[in-house]
Amino acid sequence: MIYNLPNILALLRIAMAPLMYIFLVNRDSSFFYGIDKSWLDYFAALLFVLASTTDFFDGFIARAWNQKTELGAILDPLADKMLVLAAFLGLMIIDRANPWAIYLILTREFFITGIRVAAASKNLNVSASMSGKVKTVMQMFAIGFLMMDWPYANALLWFAVVLTLYSGYEYIARYIKEVKK
Image (cartoon, rainbow, N blue to C red; front, side, top):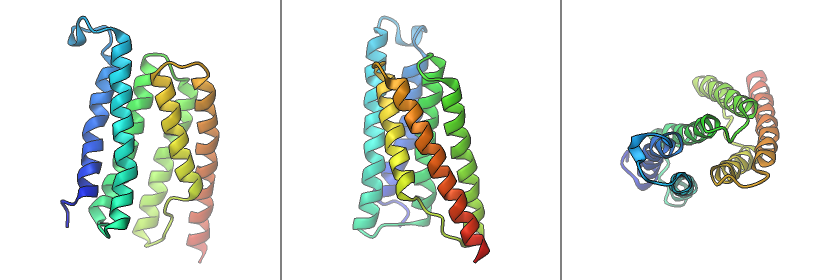
C-alpha cells in the first residue's frame, strides 16, 4: 500500500523541512513583521522536533505493522536529508553553524546517498548501521541546540561531524565488502 501511515509521516516531514527553513532565514523580512527573532527560533525548533519525531515513528510503525514499501524506502531517507539540509543551511545562513562542519556533513550525506543508489542498482545491502543511526541522533541534537542558540552547541556539532565521517567510512567499507563478494 502506497498510502500507509509511515509514508504519510515521511511526506509530512518533507513538508515541514521548508517551513522550518523559512522560520530560520526570514528573520529580517516583513514576512514575520513584529515577531521577535527568539520566537522564530522556537517555532523552527518545534517544527524540527516534530519532524524528527516523525522520523522515529515512521520507521517504528513500518516495522511493527509490516508496512515497509519501496516508496517508503525512498521517502524516508529523502525526508531525512531534506530536513537536515534545510536545518543546517538555515543555521549557516544565520551564522550559528560552522560552514566547514556543514560542508563535511553534507558532503558525506550526498556521497553515501550515491553509494546507496549504486548498491541498490546492484542489489547489494548497505542499509543503515548503528553508527549511522547514532550519527543521525547526534546531528539532530546538534541542530536543536544550534536553533536554540545554546552554549557549546558548536562543540556538539563538531562531535556530530566526527560521528558522521566515521559512519561514512563504515558505509564505504561495507559497500566495498559487498562488491567483492
